[in-house]
Image 1: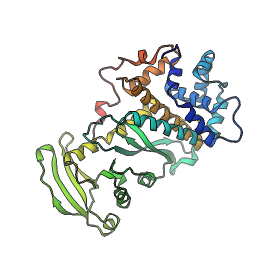
Image 2: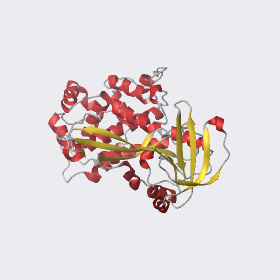
Image 3: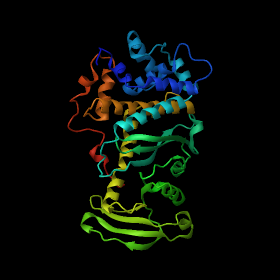
Length: 388
């Protein structure tokens, strides 16, 4: 029930604070901080995400301007730029990783029954990587090329609700295909990937885990056709084949048959070839699944535009990972609130409204209901070039 709380406090009511304390206890040092707690740090950084702060000084100035309200926000410690910088530098980023993952578990249960545009009972994931460019002189630990630095955000997105279920933050040198070694594959689930993830030994490991993959084939693929199924070319399909790999090395890596589907995208005049180890779904459903892979691209676009992960508040690896994981926690928290309050507004719209109203005393339901414009959601029309 609404009790006249500030909007920010109402949002934080959706956080499982007991879980947060367990995460802190798991990684905290011997001596607990006395004047600026881990929760103070999290809330200050979450405030920065919601209100698009660009620096530690910006955070300090804005929060001190509302110093009489900080207690009601849940912030008990004294806000100082040096204190927050020291916390981001020294407090273990795994605290915020584990807490974000716990929120992800909550969100996935809330969205488990949602449709994602394909008639499919199985869980479907989209896997992709985005690169955040950095200055090598400021972030020497994140070396990417000779004169550049970067961090890569490797993300596995549950397409029901667009909830990230696996995130790995690496330096720029790690090739995206190596992330497949870190994922525990769910049997009977679909993993949708672009051709940058083609590694037949790793795909065979996924196959042995009784999971399914859908992936774009490279033009250089050497294969031998074993069987062809009948297709309706008016749907865009050009072939639906059972194939085996013809190259001796790749056949050794993937020694069983797979399915090869060729599809013509008339809208963009592209001929696309997909590989999958699923032989039961209709060929058109496989192509529709690949279309949904673009949700992970939209996720990257969304968090880069609307969460503070391009301008980092600290330069150490610990500070960067702390900021990214808190940004992910904020994204998932908004998704949880959207579902619990049964809001029709997009995450973009919700975040825009919250950025201007955190210090108001208005109920979230009243604030966020019937606010969705007719156009302008996360799925921007000119971003849906699905097969590039």
